[in-house]
Length: 118
Image (cartoon, rainbow, N blue to C red):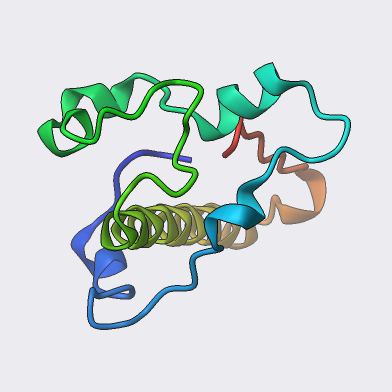
């Protein structure tokens, strides 16, 4: 998933439109999951440290976003994630359309691969 999107994708999820965010207690480590797997996914990855608003929260790697971040910040992060997913969806659609136009769709396997938490 890219960490960018175009304005048209952001407009799909405006701040006026509420987004569902699971309550902090729903973000518990699943039974049997090693804690290190949880931290790698839900913790602060490092790139967030480039933003002053994240630094001001003083969230540690092991804290993740389990109830410490203000709800509006979590909702804004969620909106950004949804905009990124919409951008990827558009790009996949363009690629599949091009394969169709070129007559290659029946001879092509498309694989989408994501990294941790993506």
